[in-house]
Image (cartoon, rainbow, N blue to C red; front, side, top):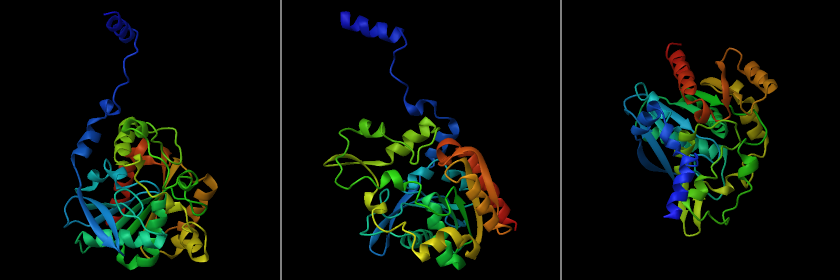
Length: 314
């Protein structure tokens, strides 16, 4: 009885357990998650690629490309907003999410996977690609190599050059690293990489639960640490052209979305704006960290919708 009384006193003193992260999820978020995607797997050069799809295959494809160490589930609460006008597709790049791994990775390989995911949808329309962070580099690579097959691309807060924003921390992991003992332990460790000040808790919790798997060695993250272990981001002349000068060469339409509190400093932003000139819009998302789907999801949706509408009438 004394123990029960002590527990009751703790609750009366305001020491109740913290509310579940989903407890404060707004209706728009839970409604978006109710639009569950179809899951499929395609083969690209011998590697199984997992794909999420939302909407009507008779509509033009809109392909969301995640960043390094992430996966297609990062778009779960974003993609449903676009189903009235598009077939929305989000692949897990090889080495990420529920896709298979490769012995080595390259932007050109991931670009091929993105186009294959769009082609597998059965739509005859050219896709629009939306790439975040490292995914923006993948989109630029796809547009450079397959521009005639692409309608337009939007790059979200991807630096022109330098290492991938996610690489510094994630490349330190190893395949043989011991897993976390419990699901709660690994979920508590979920952080945006690179770090940002704000992550809405209900979004962070959903993405975290989609980012882990249980193995014989414990709970682990769903990405291959070797994605940054080779020469992927070493700037060969060809890669440097893709990362820094591709905007001037891409034959399809292009737009750029900079996050105000992201990884692209003002001087680089001015350079990107200068490179684009009149080729496409350059937009800044106010107060957004590098991962706008985590802290500014609805302004992100509104901005992408505006750009898509702009492109539809030009």
